[in-house]
Length: 140
Image (cartoon, rainbow, N blue to C red; front, top):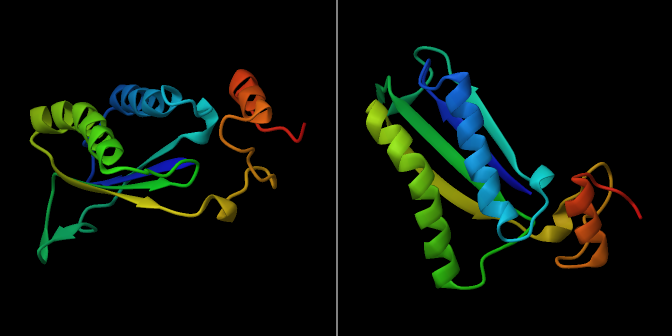
């Protein structure tokens, strides 16, 4: 499960931008062999006077939490490559709109994760390949 929580000030993104961005984010993970349905992208528009940076209201800001459980990085080169992919998606969109943003990536142990009450299959297993093909979790 990669989950992206994108909290932002009002009216920064259109529905079309949200959909296009979520598809680009999903593609990062599909390229490394994750089922597309593992990827969650949540846009949360915060109300006026709900986001402060340095003690002052910021009217064009996005705070992004990226949580990884399905796969964790093993090497610094993987981390750098991932951040470069993230930047290639976020920077063009945010810069053209004059938005300030910050993101971080957190990782957790895979054994603390279930989907529909099922422990996800091991990476690269036949069952995971079935999950990829059907784009759904299943017990068998």
